[in-house]
Image 1 (tube, rainbow, N blue to C red):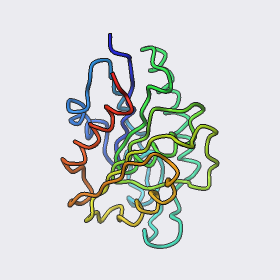
Image 2: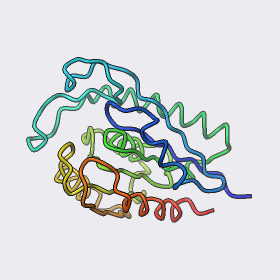
Image 3: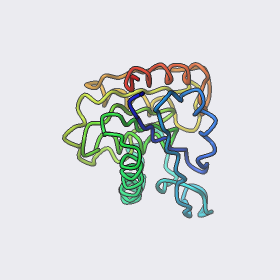
Image 4: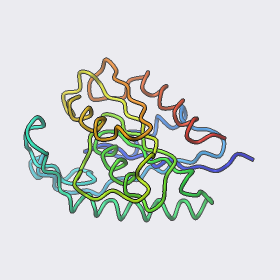
Length: 206
């Protein structure tokens, strides 16, 4: 029997879980389960106050300015909620922390990085597609050091500029980090998906 594992896959700002569901068939393996929750609906500042699905609020400040003013309280609240969902799924399927990968795209990947670096136990890895560090001043968890990280980013991304991802890359220099860029915008390049699939097989061996 394959050893059970679990991948938490978090969608981006304004999307929902169905946005990433098409990725699952390529990433699936025997015994590997996927948890794809929907973010809550909130009136997001950057969306002019319109209700959208988001893991936290984002204020409309220049990406190339000083540290962006994400809603740290909202980040923490979503992390608490997601940890609860994750713990329930782990208990239901008998998946230990070291067989869990936290992954996502864009804002969802920012949440995956935030949670994975502060998880109460070491996880198998963190995968961040087209993303950045959120609430970087929050203290890291005791098990953060050495957690494998996968990052991929489009060189022509005009939503999350490559410089933001490169900043995260530099901050994670002491981690086993697989980094790649792809000729695309704010999307998931087919090559990045292939690389992610191979990386998952390394950190979640059968």
